[in-house]
Image (tube, rainbow over all chains, first blue to last red; front, side, top):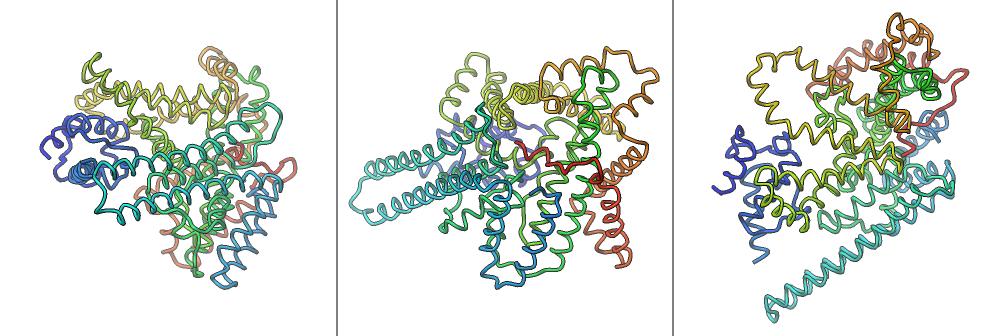
Length: 77
Length: 510
């Protein structure tokens, strides 16, 4: 989780990612951010995120993104 | 059958009555019959295209769903006896099968669209094909991704493809969202019906009183760009931007209103686009469902696909973290805008239009950190005046881009744009420009009133609530005066008197 928060913070310094729960709904992360974020996650976590995973529910909060990563890790194991 | 014809009004009236009088079970079959009749009215032979798309996509959806369910069942039944590798291999094999179904069906449908768009045999493009093909492809990809289950009933699926209010110019609704209300049963609800009718009326006002009145002037402008240069070109450009807005948002108001009368919820397609403060912001507000479609089905798949991720690694190594990160994103975005341009029309002007959008968006993205720094230091950045400046700047930019669509010719467009800054016919030209396009003083007064009305409606919609909700809270006589007033305005000032042909909507041709 810490690593993920670091990645997110790199993307937008001014957002409090620990509490924010509407990253997509409030367009805090736009589509460019999402793609950059996915590249970073794939580098750091060794998971493959595909287009079908890119839905608002999976990216609205740091917690949701973290859960997505864990879910994919389990599936790929 | 145009939305702005008496036939259409009669059609909606009869369909609406039957819809609520007949048993609830008959609602969606009635809609299907109505939708097919509506489409057939513009040429029965075009129904074949709709049928091919509906049938192929329905079939591929069912096959993919059955395959996925089969895999789950088989793995469950053979859980104990299989090794991890065997399970994985089995899953992979079937993933390939589903991918084959997807690709074959995509090839058929996008192939039809591409052939019809690129051909020069004089074949007529079936109405709405660009819109219903995108909806069909969206459904197909969603089923392949396993986002939701495939529609089991082929006739219900045919209704999704052919649903008459949205078939000609969108919105490009998602299947799962539309299906919630499309198949009913929908009880008669006075609020839905009255709100729907109000929205239709507002749509007619925008289309008939504003868009079609401006259309006459814009036609004069388009036909003779040599004469109408300089200040006239500027004026024509602004008129076209006005027409495009009133035409497309008005058409969608009618679409959403008709669906609302039937108790069906269709996705919104606009959020006060000309209040956008940047081009990026504009594309979140204009043609929202098309943008969402290209984002979900082109931008994301292209940018997260393996070759692009590999490229991302490579560019980071070569150009460093910061620049390297952005190159693949920009490249994916390039594909999206190229595709968006081609989707509008397979001609150079639309491709240039798409790529210009791309270029401006990328340049703004590159300069964003710099702009943010500037705005942090500059005191006026949060002021009302600066916001207005940003809105006007964006509006001018959009008007310039729209001109590529207006003239349908890159050379003419560039010449006209150049003439705005080089031709010195500004002095005393206001009077000339005002008369040049054949609009009378009365027309200008009507347009001015119409623009103010559209502006106020947008302004009031600030918190997401519609003006209709606010009007509905007023006393009944006041409400009656407002809606009857609007009706009378459409009746008196709608541009359908002598000299006007019923005109189709601009977006019907895409």
